Structures are given as structure tokens and as C-alpha cells.
Length: 99
Length: 99
Length: 99
Length: 99
Image (tube, rainbow over all chains, first blue to last red; front, side):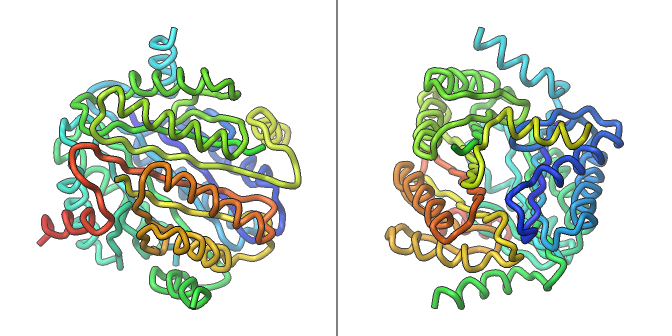
């Protein structure tokens, strides 16, 4: 199962704040039922490739529905065949090596 | 119509070369019929949101089929509602302002 | 003060695991004294523009020193002049709007 | 010598157009003397790691000077030790494999 980071940037809103748009994106992600983690620079999700891409489309369209005339959406997908990836597992693998 | 940048990074192949994977991705993109432009840091495409996301899925799966055990795929989508975006138009708008 | 996300991808190591490289990057980030947060898709840091860029250089060079023959390093910097940005503050602003 | 992609997104300008900011970035990049290539999704440059990071700082500060109250700057650096990377060479390596 891949993990991914989704980020949404509305352009031309006249506001320097992005949190309304990010909050709406997180609501859409939360409704999808996929595991997710909100971070300061994007929202990480865990799902199949099809689920992640479908969610990306929904999140992008939600930002347009909120009134942004231009939206930059980025999704970065990390997919590994030899071992299961999870949001928690990736962070823990690093923490163990630091400790 | 949005424009987007797709990039594919195979991990764990044992080779520092990425060009076999990028060439395969470009073949998949070319078959899609979408306008595209190969650059040194990714491949830019022009299509609907659904076309871009579906193409991202195909390109990602092609890298896995080529034998990469881990693939990092990034797609950045630029979508504007008040004016048509094209790959050519975006570059020309900047060139005019520089000239 | 900007916040940023730094990510490091070693290419051509022959291993699908990235955690050794990420752990080394996190050690370098930790030594810098900057506030940071490890996530499943990158490490977020809080610092001046110069500090973030200097840290990016160190982290990149550490991956090369570890033996990667090719390294892809990405830094995304979010810098706001009208209000202080912090890693914690960005996440809390979104959480308040969701609640 | 690494190659890199630099992109600048001004936030809160009230305009959906980015081309004034990109044009200013390209002027700064052009003055640096580094080889560059403007694409629809970012500007690719060729230089040492220090040159690329210093240029990223200049481009980011230029966007703030132009009046953006918030700027998102991304730089993706591709650095290879076993072979020289150039903007032209990367694209040609792929084109040869497609042909």
C-alpha cells in the first residue's frame, strides 16, 4: 500500500492565509476513511494508488468549489513492493535508527 | 485545462541512471495523446484533471512493471479557471515580460 | 521566520530502504538546533531562510558522504511576512477550523 | 555539477497570474550567469550546490521585494557523483532511448 503527501495551494484569493483551504482538504480526506496525518507542510495519507489519486482529485475540486480561481495541487506517492509501507512504520523505522 | 508536471524516481534499482525509467514514462505519456514536454527535471503535460491523474497512475505502474521495487511518483497540477492554461502559453507569458 | 520541508532521496544504492539516509539527515538537522518534525514524507524545519538553505546543503552532503552516488534533495520553503509562521502554529490553525 | 528546478509561488497577491513573479525570478537567474531553461512548471538551472542554493535565496527574496506577503519556494536538486549532469544531457539521454 502506498503512502502519499497531498498539498493544495489556492492562488489569487487575496489572502495570505491557506488554513481555510487546508481545513476543507482535511475534511475531504477524513471523509474518505483513509488514514491520514496533518503536517505543517502537507497532509500524508495511506491508501491504494487508485484511492490516493481519486482523493487528490476530490481535494483539488473542493479547493475550486471554495472559490479559488487557480489551484496548485501536488501529490507525492511512495510505493514499495517488497515491504508494506505505513505512515507510522516509515517514521518508526527512522526513529529506531536515530535512537 | 490544467497543466502538470509528472516525475518518477525508481528506488533500489542499483543503478544511478534514471533514463530507462523516464524513457518508458515518456512512451506512456506519448501514447496517451496528451501534449507533453520533456524537461531535465520532469515531464510537463496538458490535459483534463482526470486525464492527468489517470496518466500518473499509468506512468507509476509502468515503472513498477519495469522492475523497480520502490517508486516515488510526483505530480504537480496547475489548474486555472479564469483563463486557459497551456504549456506553451505559460512559458510565452513569462518570455514577453522578460523581453 | 519561514518553515520548510526537506526531503532526501538516494539513488543507485541498490536498496529499497531509505531509512538509513533519512536517519542521518535527521541527525544533521537535530545538531543544527533548529526546531524540526519528522513526518512520513519529509522533515519539516523552522528557521531563517539562510539557516534552512545552509541545513539543506549539509543534509545533501551528508547523503553523499554516506555513499550515495546520486542524491535528489528537495526543499520547499513557506515564508510569510504578515504573521509569524511556526510548525505548530500552521497545524493548529487548521485543526481549529476543522473542529 | 548538480542540476535543479526552482519554482516560486506568491500567495495572497489577489491575482491569479504568476508571470510577473516568474519573469522577475528568471531575470535574477539570468543575471547569475548559470545556464537555465524556463519550463511551464519551473525553471531548471545548472550549477554547483552552493550556487543553486544561493540563487534560490535571491529568487525567493526577489519575490518578497516585489510585494508578495507570502512566498512558497521549492528547489529540487539532482546531484550525481559518477557522471556529469547537464540540463541538455539529461534530456538527450532520454530522447536517445525513446528513438
